[in-house]
Image 1 (spheres, rainbow, N blue to C red):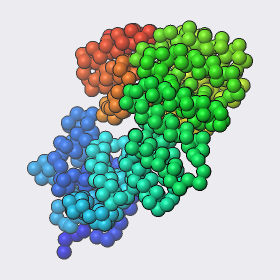
Image 2: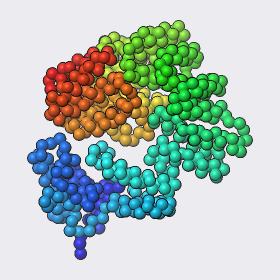
Image 3: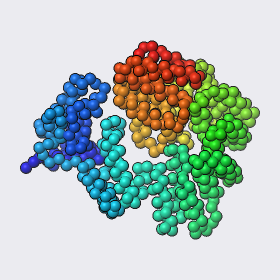
Image 4: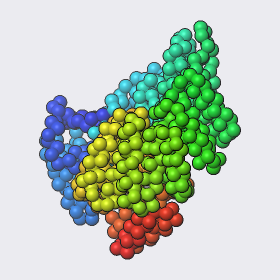
Length: 568
């Protein structure tokens, strides 16, 4: 009777041979397990040996990769207790060719395909139950897993959508507006008006924190109808503000800036009257978006800043100010004019006696000095920002000041001092009102502050774990980490891993046309080419990066790239 082998790749990887589980500790050679995983998810469970070598050892010469493959196959056969567990014939590797192979991914895909063709909701729900977790969930950063994992997950989400599994869809992607809208309608049909209102608030928060947009017009209209359905009382100020903000974001998305500004100002008045700090911060953010699109950001920000320092500190407003200050520094125009603008803000805050306002102004001035290459001045100014932020109790500003101060210390060569700053900054970032923005920024500088290549890679792994577990992460704020991680991986001789972070940075950089991150991406491309041994291409890319940094007034980065181009 043919021997049986059951392989589980959905969720955690496990194998059962002839009814006996293969213990996890037999996979002392990690690549032995990876060979089995690759074959398990491959069509017909076979791959050419060159395909396996390219996926597991893309950065090694063919001879070295071939030796590693032979060793991995040997250990895989030993772990599975069968000399024929992996057959190598004519350059093809085949998993369990002489026995009965049962892979859970195969069963899921067969059931899913049949259910989706039928269109039956019950059948789709039944097929979805075969999905016991993301493909090879214990290998979140292996590049070769990405494509088959996404393919399986897409099939699973299609099943959930067809089956009406809206709650499970939101566990996978809390920004899925169709799912939120379907649940709102389900709540309204059941007479649960409050449930529909809560669902809208959950959607609005997810969209704002994850991708910086608002619900679409259809969802806003559904929310407005829910407010009036069998309502014993008129909508509360917070609910009216939610409608105003949502409509403002819809208008902004349609580039109707006048309507977006009108909504934001109406919400701002409402929030001030009702003491709604959170909604006031969101209205300020929407005003800043409109002003930036019109090219009047400095004027509007100055007005908002002056008004905020005349009133008791509202953390939500200052957090909004901080976010847009960072956007301004890394926008397409770079940091030109930041010094005079920062001096103006400092004067306004000092006349108002606002420690929080001074913290923000000093932060802007310190960042300007750092980006302009005046590192010693940046250190002094950022310390002032930290002192004022501590006086005012502004946790977000403290985290940003420490993070930037650490970056300046790295530039001065004092990495130990930088790491001490970051050790203080990380818990502050986590406890702030905007951890989705601040925590990943600290992780990015931790890569820069590491004192060895191993330390850099360790900092990257820690950040990757945090990203995997985090509920919300601001994409633009993660750019610093992606750039630092891609650069460190390339210098460590792992261009394939570097390209994973580079790809994320490329995606996010689409939010800007030009600017510092665009220049930084040219430098990353150069580092990857250099790691691949393509010196002439790397030199050309370094020179392109230097030219862009020069145009943005970033002399330290320009010098670094020019020096790198010479050594390629």
